[in-house]
Image (cartoon, rainbow over all chains, first blue to last red; front, side):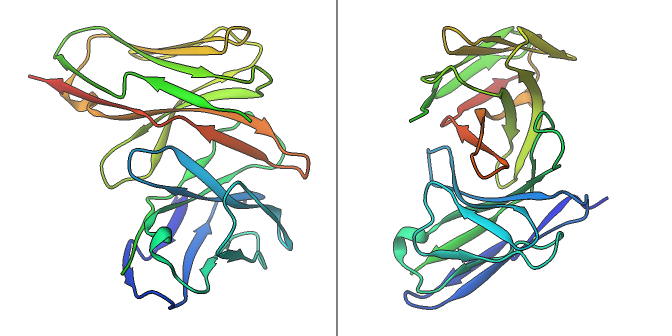
Amino acid sequence: NAGVTQTPKFHILKIGQSMTLQCTQDMNHNYMYWYRQDPGMGLKLIYYSVGAGITDKGEVPNGYNVSRSTTEDFPLRLELAAPSQTSVYFCASSPRQNSNQPQHFGDGTRLSIL
Amino acid sequence: KQEVTQIPAALSVPEGENLVLNCSFTDSAIYNLQWFRQDPGKGLTSLLLIQSSQREQTSGRLNASLDKSSGRSTLYIAASQPGDSATYLCAVRLILTGGGNKLTFGTGTQLKVEL
């Protein structure tokens, strides 16, 4: 059981380039989330999705876009990378019916923008 | 706006000690509270989840308590071991108007258990 899988694990991007961070889960969870974690800070919610075709903004959505065409996949896109987007990005998922179930996290994507 | 604070930011203890990590939150209207462990270069592993109606949860050497009215939670680790060295994050869960739920995280306590 793979859980939540994120690719790539590491990446270096130049300012102004675009990139898609991939996230897939095999637990048939309806809810999926993208967080970013900056050094010494807690995780902040970027975008979330409650099901295929439905997405909504979190706390820090500027500079990012998401799509949810399938239950399994929730990619995060950076259109014009900026140094402020250097961070560790975590994808998470949780079941639909019961919010008392914990969110399951991937191992993260460490992204540097130079 | 919900804010979550964890004290201390870092803690170093000798092996075998019992220790307490603290978490406080500003808005008591939470759905539940979750404690996570994060190892360097890894994602988050859920340790304990406490419902808003509960006072505590236990798993092995870990015990988490919740005082919702005062906005506080503690994570108690008994007989600490070097393998417990990690960053411990506290997060409170809110239900979002559009469905789904959101976790608001503290900045974590970095724990080192020394031999």
